[in-house]
Length: 397
Ligand SMILES: Cc1ncc(COP(=O)(O)O)c(C=O)c1O
Image 1 (cartoon, rainbow, N blue to C red):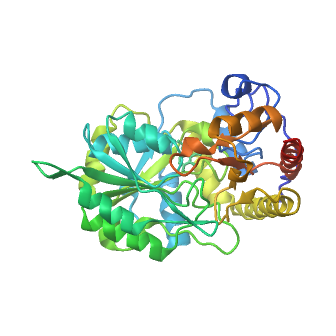
Image 2 (image 1 turned 90 degrees about the horizontal axis):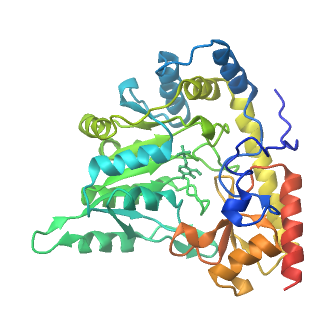
């Protein structure tokens, strides 16, 4: 079926995390919301229908994922990536962040270290810190407006990570964002392989957050880290979900794929007592994964169009700003360092002069200062309005 992503849908007064918290989050109501990563598009029709059908049954008791949902996941990863997984490798979570917390708590003890590649999705930091562990930074390198991994830096971190006099290696895992939020990279097979080989050499697990795996710019392909070799598969916990792609984040349902029996048992023990998915999340995810290819195809084309629109606008009318090249996600990472503001000044400028609700770059860790993240999963007229506001504010400086 044909979807109309130009349609404006008023989301105010729906308890929307994105649209109903402006005063508490940004200190003003007068902002255009382009921050947290959900979409201002309706979910695909089969998803809405599946939820309605389930809602018609008036009892919403304890629930579990159906065999059809397991099959949908198994079939999808095989169809898209040639990855043959077994049903029993799948563990449901109440969202990817929930799953990451479980992974940190399952495989690291107080004081242990986990590596992140900033600038990166900031809940990675809280999942590590709030579990009593320490963040070790292996920042991405910006090379001609595109981000790359720092492999030499990564090797050095492992060399440094021993505790004298016990010399216990303290780095337990690397939390990978693939595709990368906010840098917009879709990591190549070669990059992932090199990263994974270093991790394997140092017996470091990989928590591979692949929530953005469907949201690819034209011409890019996603490689699940675990598909690179049987050894890497045994060292990797993969997190996926229909939540970004099909706009069902509020249903708090995602899944981890853990091929290694021992790791899966350890993970499952650590998370006992946590919720997994929920009954609406299960039916929605099944419909999303099996009946919505047309939606995904149209969505990708529309998002590509939004990026083209924004990059042309910036090039022609805001030449002091720079958009980082995007290969995946619907998040635009924009360099405003040329405006010469410190993070507090830039935040104030964006909120109160440009009247935009964005994600401040500094929140994504080292290297994020001076950047802002725009969520482009919205009708093009919103992107245009945001750019006009920004242009006016920049011209008034
Ligand atoms: C990389 C990444 N991981 C996880 C999430 C959140 O996932 P969930 O809502 O399933 O916890 C997001 C949301 O923006 C994200 O960008």
